[in-house]
Length: 235
Image 1: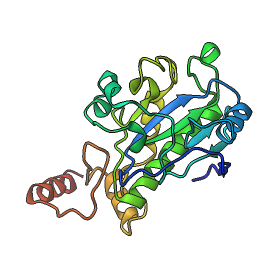
Image 2: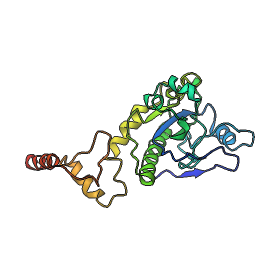
Image 3: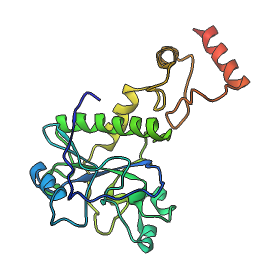
Image 4: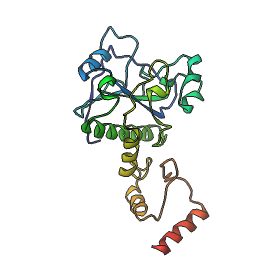
């Protein structure tokens, strides 16, 4: 990742184990304050109830409070409130969303930005989303699909208490579009055949799956071989 991440979590930062659950959903927030106030709160002995994995600042700086392997306290719901979630992915799971989510705070005040990011902040957030997707795949071999089912806002988890988080102007579409433009597949970053896969994908000889994966270790079918030969002949 070209943007350096500064780890600032301390002994007062709230976190707990995921109880064996693999994280597979990225949740975006607005910090409702400055980067200084956000860092102070997530590292304060007075804070015994909340935390986040990352913070993306207006100037593009990225801070980390909690390891991806651990659960931050930012997207929690009581079991009886899960059915109120806007996200079907959340609604269909009967467990605390903190267990499977990775949270990104974005410096800003909803009242003045409505979730809109600065250019540097947007570019850093895109880089961070890609970093998280790669990290989860490399660590757990789990693919986080690049779409609005898996990259969501806090309001989609908790529409009652957080109806405007991260805001109507938060650039979900830009983030998802840019990630897809800058990479072909989510699961080839550390694969030995990455260069060859990209070479063939650039020439539209080979294609991936709808979830933006390539699945390089999956056996190829006769139908897929036929499609590849057709593309080579057409080329």
